Image 1: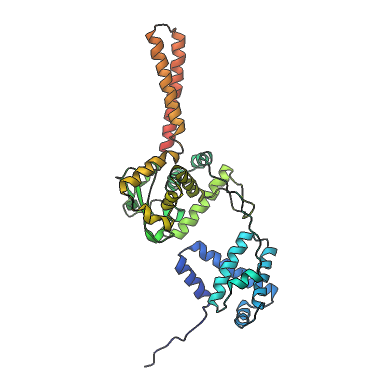
Image 2 (image 1 turned 90 degrees about the vertical axis):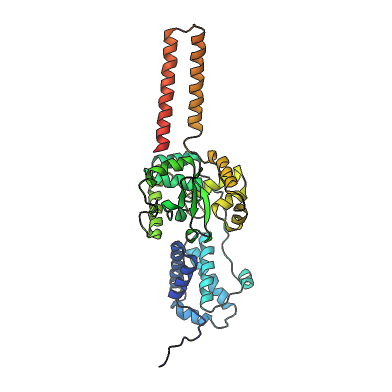
Length: 369
């Protein structure tokens, strides 16, 4: 009986390359970008060279000298004429080089430097997400989304990591609450741990009490790729309701995205501790090993020092009102002891105290929602 044997190949089909690319990255977003690049490339070949991309690739596999680099420059020029942003062009060109390598077309980095010109990328200053922005977004969010956003901004998690979490990933006996992110869902494919703030804990409690240990906390579907897209659409609608529509000129990206919450955490962690600590909790691989050499107690202590800077509602406003209430009570006690107050003055101060207590109660209820 004859057995089928595979012949040696130096190239991959387009479909095989896409599948291999996805299996390596496990990112639907990256796969979609790759498909977009290949579609642009197919259109370029047809419109500029009047031919099928596969036929052109066969021709390029031969020793064509500078013709290959002229071809690549034409593709860059085509993207510029299509008004793609310089950063997008650079990203698409890098992806295309990887694809061409899978087609048996070797590209020299030195020749690229000498013979190919990419548009200059102008780096704009990134606009930070402020607590005022966060309060606005949280106030317009439903309770489940508010819990998710408080978790993101107080933990440094990526949105894809957060929606993969199950109740069993939260150590509710820990103070602060310890969250373990399974390695298969992290960008580095390495399990890591982080914490969430007391505000996130309070918002999560009402969700977690209805969940079983194996239930997803934030995602409504086991299809996590679809769940992530749904969260990004939800945030886009929220951003519109809040009127936060500004974009960067260099990339046309919004200045505030769901990923800005991770950047907010990173900034606060860097200020309170340092960049190395922030990178460790963010999940940057080069910093994790040293961080996990610290004891569990030390890691919790470092987070407790950081936590006040991550609180959105329960820090400045409540503290200020509590201090004001204390001062007014002291004034009444002092004046009463001197028996020098008229009933009208006492009444006015008492009314002021009642108003402060109402405001404190309102703020506390807002935090718990």
